[in-house]
Length: 158
Ligand SMILES: [Zn+2]
Image 1 (cartoon, helix red, strand yellow):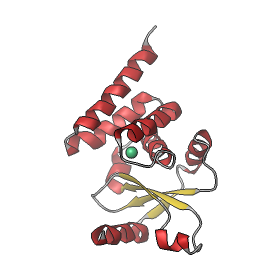
Image 2 (cartoon, protein in one colour; image 1 turned 90 degrees about the horizontal axis):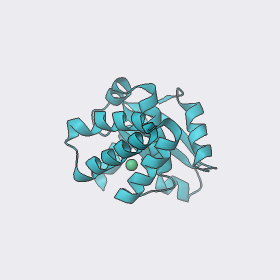
Image 3 (cartoon, protein in one colour; image 1 turned 60 degrees about the vertical axis):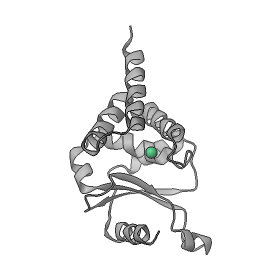
Image 4 (tube, protein in one colour; image 1 turned 180 degrees about the vertical axis):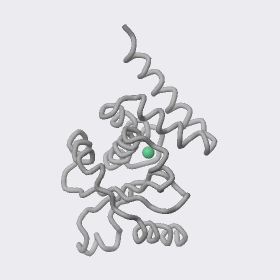
């Protein structure tokens, strides 16, 4: 869609690259057995979407001009309100979308599972709460939170 295309270009041109999670990105890629893709972390000055993974620009990659460069984009708002571990949880979730690429509930849960493996359920849960609550959580959002609750309880059982 045209509007989305413009928004994407805006993200690409205004985001500033942060290296603070480079090591964790490598760790998450290794965990998910993802090789050959470069994933970078960008912070953008915009109040819209919080955490998004972008594939390589389609046309350029078709022409072989750009390596497989993926961008995980956080708004500066989310960058400020999330703890380091919460950010890692979201980064892991987004990287897992390279394996589970759709927005279907089953892919979302698979990506949550990868994040839980890397940072534990409490960090992902608190990150999602910060994002979902102000946006009116959907039925699927609540289901994901319930699953994390259950994993958390299982983990703390004596
Ligand atoms: Zn997702």
